[in-house]
Each structure stands twice: as C-alpha cells, then as structure tokens.
Length: 172
Image 1: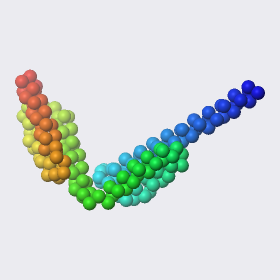
Image 2: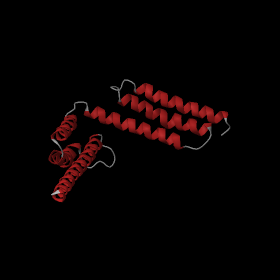
Image 3: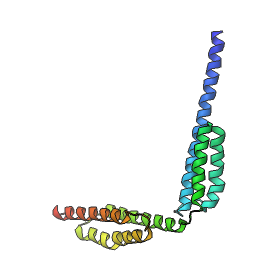
C-alpha cells in the first residue's frame, strides 16, 4: 500500500512540475512577444513587422498560451498587460512617442561613442560638441512631454566635461 501511495505521489508531483514548466515557458514566450511589440511600436532596428502585425501574430497567440498553461490569476495578469500594449497602438501621441524614442536612442548612441573614444581632451571635447550636444538638442526637441529630458541630457554632458577635465589634469 505504501508503494502504491508513493507512486501516486510521484506521478502527481511530476504532473505538477510539468504544468509549472509549461506555464513558465508560456510566460517567457509572452514576455518575448511583448518586447517584440514594443520594438515594433517604436520602429527599432530588427523589429519583426508593424506593431499591429506583431500584436496580432505574436502577442495574441502568446497570451492564449499563458491563459491555457497558467493559473487563472496569471492569465488575467497577462491579459491586462496585453490590453495595455494593444491600447498603446491607439495612442494619439504615438508619432511623438516614436520620435522621442528614436531621438533618445540616438542620444544614447552618441554617449556610447564618447565612452568608447580614446584620446586627449581635444578629441573628447570634439565628440561632445559635434556629436553629443546636437543629439541632446534633438532629444529635448523631440520629447517635450518628458519634463526632465533637458536636465538628464545636461547632467550627462556635465559628466562628460568633468571626465575631459580629469583627462586634461592627468596628462592623458
């Protein structure tokens, strides 16, 4: 009798673990689909189609997978996230948000150029003046709805000039 109870316990435990694994895999797929939708929404490089097509072809099936494989609460949470993602497709500020995202990404890329530049103060100053500052200006102009964009870009530029001063003071 003990052996039979043990076998039943092991079978149920195995089924429970498999169900949790299926739910976990479905959640990972849903998260990936959500990220793909955001990439398509903001028209980022490597996006897999338009935001609308990604919502229909990728997010909807991934949501169905979560709802089928996971407990009701998890499925409801995923449905809520999916509804929010779908609602953003109708956002009247969509064009402005996309332009802001592109300008912010471009600013970040110029900051990365500065961080990867090797050279003396003159070279670094040139990168800030001719690459970073114009990108910061474009980000500020493209993101009027982001109240602290000017401050964030100015802080980053100030940090760059502090580094340039340090390089100059240390004879690099």
